Amino acid sequence: MLLGTESLCKGLPLTQEEFPLIQELHEFVGRHPRLLVLSGAGISTASGIPGYRDEDGVWKGRRPTMLQEFLGLQLARQRYWARSMIGWPEVANAQPNAAHYALARLEAAGHVQRLVTQNVDGLHQRAGSTGVIELHGSLGKVVCLTCGRVFLRSEIQHRLESENPLFAGGVAVQAPDGDALVEYENFDAFHVPQCSYCGGLLKPDVVFFGGSVPRDRIHAATQEMENADALLVVGSSLMVYSGYRFCLLAHQLGKPIAAINLGHTRADALLALKVRQPCIQAFASLLDRLGLERAYG
Image 1 (tube, one colour):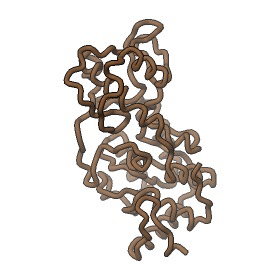
Image 2 (cartoon, one colour):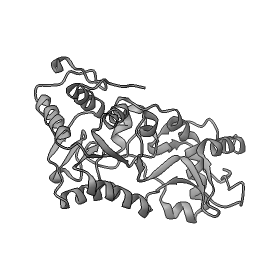
Image 3 (tube, one colour):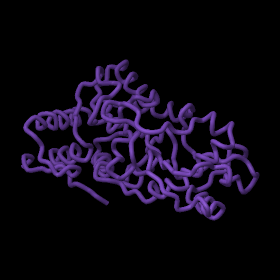
Image 4 (spheres, one colour):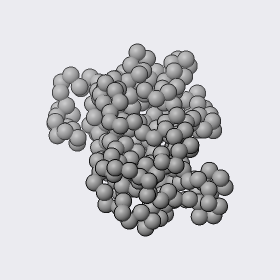
């Protein structure tokens, strides 16, 4: 019985007020078999990866490195790579949670047409989702801006640690997207990795703040939205335009939008349905109603 279903996040049973929302979500999924899903940081917080914003959509903590800073200032690159060296292992070792696996299960059952994510952690793919459109790229890859060669982030991590032993093992607080709040007073001595083929500038294969999502990804996601019946937003405040644009597009196309998100979203006024629950809890209840077995990897 749904009355006894417990939240995998908080260990709490669904309240009577929450039952109608889950029923509406079940009906929403049933009415729209070609569902486009847009995911954000909120789906990965249960995997130990912090989000950027609080439940009101307000920015938390220190601002990230901006693209122009990274490209133009050696000190900015030193600071970025030093923090990333400490923060990357948390992302590399993170495991998909039940919400990631639920989306893969929904795709396999024919309920999800395509998944578009703002996340760079690769957890959707590791959970079994296929054809994922990564709007902001992948933190697991590093690209040379001179020759275009692509390296695995794990390879660069080995080089960072071997070339910067004085910085390894620093005290840090985990921050979003593999960043870390480290206590170094200065980064002047940090050795920034270079391309081992041409000596060029290396950059994580992600869209930095201040950068633009590549047009091919926008085009691919736009086509999926045009072909979909509806849009389901999962764990995103939509404060960044790269994701919000697809809510605007869905609205322009007359296609309904639902969201699973604990807090405020930029698209609240456009939503046909909003489920204010942790992603894991909402998907567990949805799978139960659809008669689908929960998968945890």
